[in-house]
Length: 213
Ligand SMILES: NC(=O)c1ccc[n+]([C@@H]2O[C@H](COP(=O)([O-])OP(=O)(O)OC[C@H]3O[C@@H](n4cnc5c(N)ncnc54)[C@H](OP(=O)(O)O)[C@@H]3O)[C@@H](O)[C@H]2O)c1
Image (cartoon, rainbow, N blue to C red; front, side, top):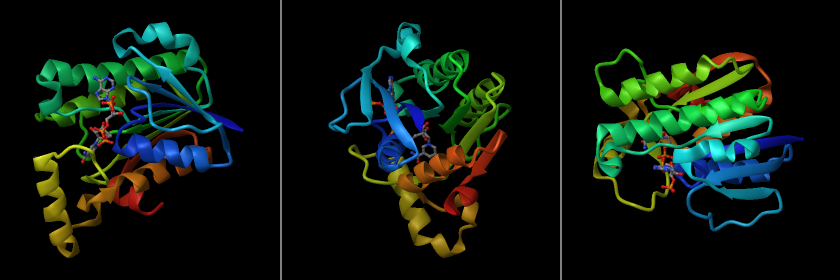
């Protein structure tokens, strides 16, 4: 009898996660915080139109058992490092803070392979910083997925990502498990299974571990 809270529910991983949560008997309610309505109706699903620049206004709604963050953008879409940071760090961190303040006990997030708050690479550093920020709140359980290249049915074309996926698929037999392409559905499955495992503490799930769920 769990209530899930999801941001990034319209994305590649977020869509898979939301569909899997809706199909899971242990989750009886799924609240998604979105900027555009999802083309999805389900008795367990509630959609909350959300202004992420003023997430405090939605604070009273961010109540449940498990919060999931699948939100993120790309430098190309965001247009600048500042805009990227606002989405990948500030929106995610604000959501975690409000969830924690409202008594949410478990937080699952999609970060990325190579996340490291001390990295020289801006993307990896941002992911590492948001991981650290989420962990410092003190949720009883935190599950951080660090996937390699995500595979799934993306609406738009991302050339860099497609090249990475092509190389990954072509050279799959040579690539160590941690660097192999992974489906968005598999990442979602791992996060949900982790949330149901009731294991306390911070759990970093590298891409090879995500593949095993
Ligand atoms: N792509 C990869 O290969 C890869 C690999 C490793 C890790 N990751 C990370 O994994 C996470 C999930 O990736 P994904 O590919 O599933 O993401 P995605 O398909 O790009 O979806 C991103 C989600 O974030 C939301 N979002 C983006 N910008 C927003 C904004 N300004 N305001 C509100 N919501 C916003 C999107 O909502 P809208 O639909 O409203 O835009 C969407 O729900 C991301 O953090 C990403 O960095 C990606």
